[in-house]
Length: 495
Image 1 (spheres, rainbow, N blue to C red):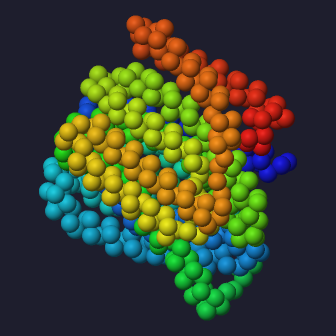
Image 2: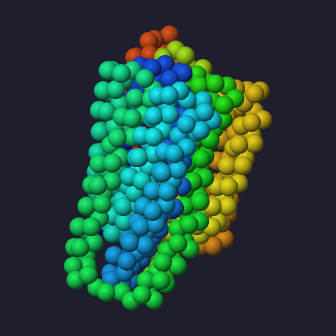
């Protein structure tokens, strides 16, 4: 089987899991928004966003460090370093996480006053503090499994177990308790069990690769530790900035316009971020392969992999972003009429994210080539742009200003990463390849959704969305037929 076919099949498996994850996350968001209203939804997003940022801080970038280190060690035949590397990654995360958790537990009343929480909200902070270490460890442990090539473990734990358990828990508390704080408890609870599952899986995978438990000297371990954290800590800083980028605009909207506007904008951003699922699948599959190719000096193989992933991103993510841009008003109406005020913001973000994916998996290339510091600087620039422009534009344009601020930050980050990837590795995406990959999304999806939206402009939301799904079904069928004709230009573009 060719490397392109293996990449495609692994990506489809991972993509399937991420689709399930994104779909269930959408249902959880819908359940909170529909069941609790915009104000309570804003409160829900407020605490879960701070929690996601905190887990990124505690994770220290060790997840990506393990993906890169373990895949390189396997490629170079250095399996004896696997166990020491995992210990080097996991123990500091546990220690640092315990300190942060204790600090949050002790300072919960003060933090609650700062965030404007009531007594129940302060208790919820304490629950999240307990879940902080498991929440951070999940990513690190699953990063180890990815580095060893066990993509299915990531899919089962991250994309199936957590969202299914989370949906069940959140549904129970929304129905029986009906508060934003209880919804947060249900959202966080599955993380404890997921961390245990991920730890057992990684331990068994390492035992299968290195059953003899080969001994590594103290000096070698020190060198491994230095190399690991020299890469991982800058990546950890970038992850914190990425999580801040995911949530800072929502938090700023809440601060500037109140929880209700923050709830609307939070739903808008969650819908858009569902489109990142294919990029995430590509990153999960591509990361270990690219790291191994770079470690072995296979530059042409690495470049070919980057090009295929870029084309896959265009043909798979553009239809999603086109669909939510054209039918933004209808989709937001599913959450309730009050959420439809975010229609134009959703259009802005959909366009921005579609353009970002046109550049390809630039972030993965930077990381797997060892340029974690470059990515850290890029994310810092993007975050500054986001914060400054949000503060300037939100008082004037409301949540649409927040969307414009985020779009500007995304554009700058993509241009910086593209320049750095070309300068260091000479990787680039040609205009011809982009045009070939974009033909079907533009002709079928954009053309089809505009026609359906115009013809059914007076129809109910049900029939309009049914027409949208019909267009996407046609696109899927044509795409499948075209890909099977591997001799054509479109098939070659991703093969």
